[in-house]
Length: 325
Image 1 (tube, one colour):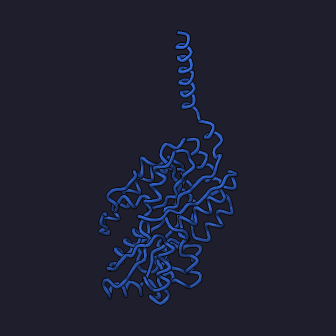
Image 2 (cartoon, rainbow, N blue to C red; image 1 turned 30 degrees about the horizontal axis):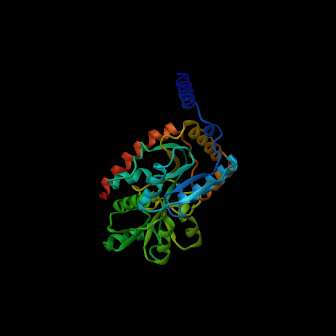
């Protein structure tokens, strides 16, 4: 009888301890981070997602005193890397470098291995930038020249794309410009631009961070920026409005997302830290190099933005006649 009472008392104590732990942040949450944080970039190295992840991750590592490791996991239009985060432990140590492609994929992929709303907690947005229309140096001298060429030779133009974001903005461009041509898929924006440089593809609609170095070196030519105002890092490149295609504008945003169920104190801490990074003069200067604009949103604001973006890109896919696969 005494033995049973002891066992019962121990069980009650254990239950009470567990209940109390569930009601407050655990030791790991309170002292987070206690080990390196891994940020999954679901695209190849060299693209804008990779560039932004490495900059923000590097500064965050200095502020937190723990290493932030960038892990590139390209493939399947970004689904491979995204799914890793969706199925990771919700402890804040595996993060997703999300971008506009995150809300584009559901419009063209029939069966995603994750739910873009239920399987993620959104941490912070930290920037956005317009796209730039690029061609090989000898393809065309202006956007009007490119459109004349593309419209006069149906099916002739090959557009290099990385799938996801680049695929959407490429299909949008083709639709708005009124021509037919192949969209060739690559594992990242950087590999796509390599084929534009070599002449294997005629053009690419790329993010400015991805294309900037190649534009400056003369390896590709920038014909227009997909915006209503010129990009600070490309002041001599006209906008699509100025260049003769005013209906076409597109930009990319970048954000961090955590696995669904990550403790709120961790999400809030990371949002606060990223906000502090974006407020640094060094960040403003670094982003300006690639015509990127710092843009911080709270987890609640992002939670409202994502459904609106999903609906927006579903309509774009429908209008551009992009088939689901």
